Length: 181
Image (cartoon, rainbow, N blue to C red; front, side, top):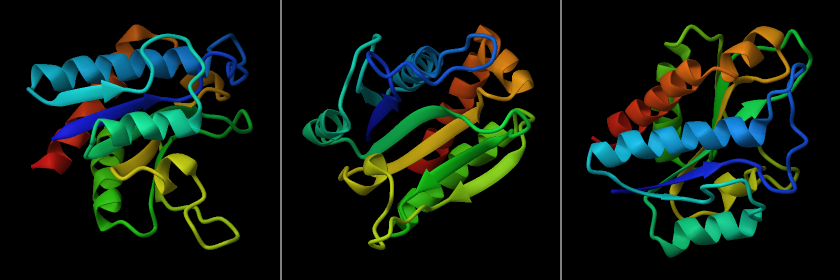
């Protein structure tokens, strides 16, 4: 099995910030690098769409996953919304039973960190296709996981700590491993 990790945003796309300075692009990169380390230790082959702060287009991200023949793609983000919004959610393709199963495994483990369960979800565009490019276009079983709200002051505090990012990485890695069995 080969896993592609996609830390969202980065490079010129650094606008998503929390109220006290958390930057989504940096936080999710750190989480993704930690997931990679955990999976590699388990003997799982991992590719990553970016390993530093750089701009990588959505098309290039998909090309990296497809070009490396990834079986699974997990795009990692933190969410934005009103300050009271909180919790984790994971999106999957409306047309993929495997995507739903992967989303469920990751979501269960992230919720286990004590975060509100916003559920596993699909989102369709007006044309009836999957809305998110990173779910719609890769050949791999693909999900987008939102590891809390960086716009929520309490969750931003968590996201700013290395210990929470390690726990989130472990949860995502454990979800991937459980799905792959």
